Image (cartoon, rainbow, N blue to C red; front, top):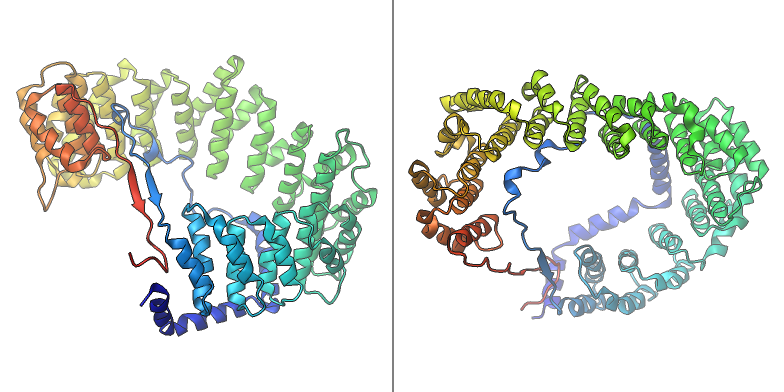
Length: 639
């Protein structure tokens, strides 16, 4: 029995799934699609009113690089995915079978194969097109094939799509195919789209497809019909909305084709209509109005957009801001900067930062400094990035530092961004400020981890004694059985501080921290505090003889393979580093054992091989290519 026959037997048992698929297709009938489309429009308009249910970190502090991972460093070899050459013939056999479910799954699998990076999918195009154009193809199969052809970017399918659509009455297929035809910018059904715009017998869904199609093609000849739809209050709002966007898009395309932009780029009737709609009390009217002129770069229309840029409805203001920011004179928006900074919608505030980037002066720096404390992660992150760009100019460095320093007295969002800026600018005085403000004890992990990272990177001698005392206090608490009182973020911060003192060979670190953290402690097994301590031994004794009091404990940690509670691999890795950097011969046997067990492509294996090289000068083997055979398919070769 071959794979096809075997799968046919399985399909008999899947009637429920087939019935469910048919029910799902029913959901896409015109009436239901129309309702779904209306819901989407309402959601798109209301999303600007939404507020974040929770704060999301602009910079995950757990992603801040640890200096102990830098040398010798390790990068796993990229895995190469292997696809069997027998897959495609098998899928094409399923596509040509007489079983609907096999045909559908074969087409869907090609889409999946594209996502997984399989090459050579173009070879399926002729078979897919042949099956797609057969008159008796099940509608679910035809839709799946259309998606497969789109996935492999078979632009030559556009005419076949148009031919089938001329005889088929399947709204789902029509939506799939016409969207692809528009994306491919094929004009094979542009005449159909033109006629459909004003045909009252067409559904809202099909007319919407036509509007988006002519806009994508840049079909200027339809502008009058689109304008009539916008201004006709009897028309469904979804079509008026799509038409207004289409007019703005067409005007933008036209303007881009004209080098010397003149005042006649936009039809004056459209500009006048937009000005009238702007005076309306209805949000929907003003939304249509701003869409009409959103792509216009000429002076009269920019003035109208500037008025829209101050609209109390953010959904409208953000369209106007974007339109003006894309012109050659974005600073027309300067008068709206306070409106933008204080806007309740984060997108407008983000656009205000884009405007401030054009200012590039001290006043802009102060305003950006305030936005470092914004509640939305995208806004405060963009403010930080913009300030760092300003700092590339010598004249603004001090202003940027002042803004970042001021942020350290704000909420946790501003403190985190200020710390990142001061660290990246290597501003040494920030280390002392960090300690004076008690940021290591801040309740938010975003702050105390970033503060510890800053102290590690700035490495200011005057802070070492205070940090050593701080670590002594907390490590004593941890080892006294109170490890549970600390959050994971605090252990991350402690590890950065230990790395700071270790890299500077701070001798007091041995008694304060290292001696207490070598022994295995299940309560803190997976935290980086112990690896940092063991790494620090290596930094302190690099190029020297490792004291005997450390040799056996480190080898014991490396050898610990307790089946119930094995030692952390991160700890083992840092043991290998320290044994290597101190050239401790006693650890050679254990290093060879774990190099063999773990392999070159693992971090632990690589560090063991690196340590062996330090001891014997044996070269580190080249990384082996990792091959992964992709076998997760609905239908695959039996061998």
